[in-house]
Length: 621
Image 1 (cartoon, rainbow, N blue to C red):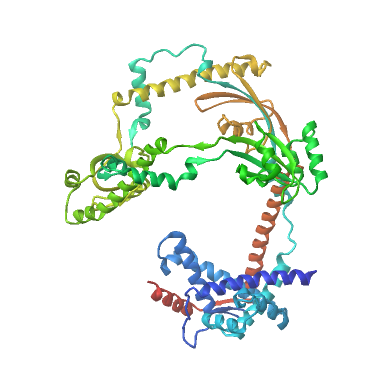
Image 2: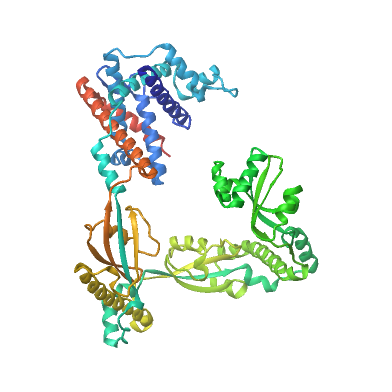
């Protein structure tokens, strides 16, 4: 058993090694650190090869560059902890190799041979080991066969040692139970909802003083963000449609090319459930007829889903023979059959009737002309794009373009949440986001075939709008605040009553309830705080909260423990156990590696490190 487990672990490691080998072909290059430098240090008697440090450091820096989207220098890599991370990893690896050698742990040639033969990187097109490919890959990598196979041998032995250290580490049950208790505990509660129609009396008309006070207390709600005042010239296909003429022949040709859209036979939405025998199909139909089964339950009994049996829209021609007659003989949704098919006897459920479509050219003409006009307008705009770009390059202003071409001049005070006119286009939003006053207008295409050019006029600092300009918004805010304040008073009155023993239904506010909800439950129409607050209460306790313009009085009615029979909880328990055991194994491995490294003694050659860093720096673009 132990040998089998060790072999499996060795296989995993060699796959990782093969992955690193293939990554190495991506351009790490063959290093040249001089004949006198072959290691950056050692742990005990085990060297830390300089080439391994170089390759892994380049790989880590490349990964960091992809993540950050910028070039990373050696100084940056050191500040980000990349250098120490790679050194620690290689030091721990060397420590385990040294310990394996000390205790005489190794693997034979046959195990190494198995690993090499199984590596996909060394296989030919027939899937078998290819010695030429093996030697070629290693040659490109700058490694000899002896060096590579020695690495495989060490890697496998190291994995066996690592498995002995961390294998069978049990997950901490106290931690798992605590997490399951948190995520799996269930609560039952009910709540009364107070909305504007539950107000004891209508809101009074606010005075100017009240509105002014609300406005001054909530100026952030009436403050415009920083904006860019942008002038732009644009043209859309729809702006040119009226200038494009479409002849009758073109419209008719388009109509004929779309004949399948304008002329369609009657179709039906059909599902088909196939059975292994006539007897099974007949028995299923009998169950449908006597009501002991539904079509869906029959589908699920076969281990299928409704998606598996859905045929979608079908025509009469698509269901030949008895099936077609039966399905298209139904005047309303229902089940027909069983009928023979190429795959066996089947029941057919018809879910809907799509009437035949026959739109004559005369009815479709307007839409066809519009489509053709839009397409031709896009071509016209595409043709004028080069001319516009040339004129901008010659120094033409947006105002001049608007006077002399089909482009229209507009202005917008834009910010990231703007959504009117041109601000609805992704291309404009992306360009506006990075636009500066140093940018010259250039032609940019819009998603629908239009084009535009833009200019930044000025940056508008955040500013508070005058109360008269936002009076409707101020009034709405005051009314919402006043409504919530009054509803809270009513909810508090009901809360005092239920604490004295009255039922939650004592007021006119509607009452709802939920049973056995977990922390991640979603109750439609209520704010997330409703469930969150339920898990903060003691059984029998109550709380007032607001959300969605309403006030809620929540009462906790019961606390139920974790349901370990629940499939979701069982899966969660399994995942938590695996994660905890894995985390503990990683910590244990790191501690063991550090301990054996400290025991054996670690020596680092700072001169070798500096030479590697220097070579990487000079190779950077």
